[in-house]
Image (cartoon, rainbow, N blue to C red; front, side, top):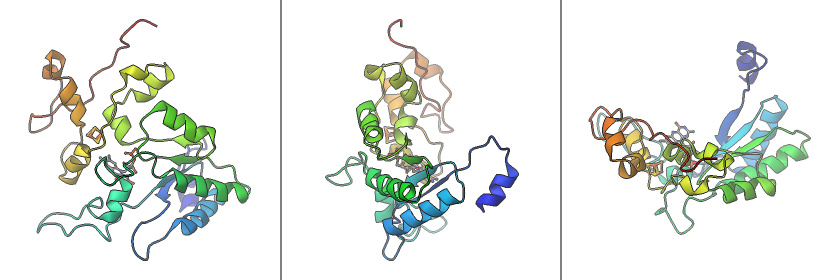
Length: 220
Ligand SMILES: Cc1cc2nc3c(=O)[nH]c(=O)nc-3n(C[C@H](O)[C@H](O)[C@H](O)COP(=O)(O)O)c2cc1C
Ligand code: SF4
């Protein structure tokens, strides 16, 4: 499959895979399997390995009649996208040990394929520490990037105090589950003023569709 994809894209096109470091279901693949998968993917020439966890249909809640099953409703789904209320550990950096173990296995096999980690990463210091100890080569973020699409640029420019921090309650995921346009609750909460009133809205008219635009608070 990797060879077929590579054959269809230009030489300058990066081809990687996001796969599960642990399926987090009974009888599913675990970290040892994921290390073997990572080594095989690296040897097959993927440009990056991005590690996720859980989020399986196998243990998803039975949907209502006429609705589709949604993979983040069971225990493995909670492992994929934990909230601040999931358990005492919370969502923060929870998948890093998976990425670190897969990266170690890939390096031991003699491959230098970059490994990406994601899951509850929302803060520059946290991201930097993961990279500094070599647990991963790249940081990715779904919810923090949704909450603040300018997060990366704010970090690059040292604008930490201007970051809109995700609060990890999964309002966005609830919308996705209902097949509604995915937006972030913070966009509406913090920007309900004049600019918010002008912004494009969701089909039900209740939510803004894009993040509020960002301008640095002070000149650089
Ligand atoms: C609204 C939403 C939809 C998502 N859909 C998918 C998906 O279709 N496939 C997938 O592998 N992960 C999906 N994810 C999970 C993310 O890839 C990621 O593993 C998870 O959100 C944890 O990272 P985070 O804490 O940075 O959000 C989704 C996440 C969000 C917030
Ligand atoms: S709605 Fe926004 S704040 Fe809430 S979890 Fe999603 S991205 Fe984070």
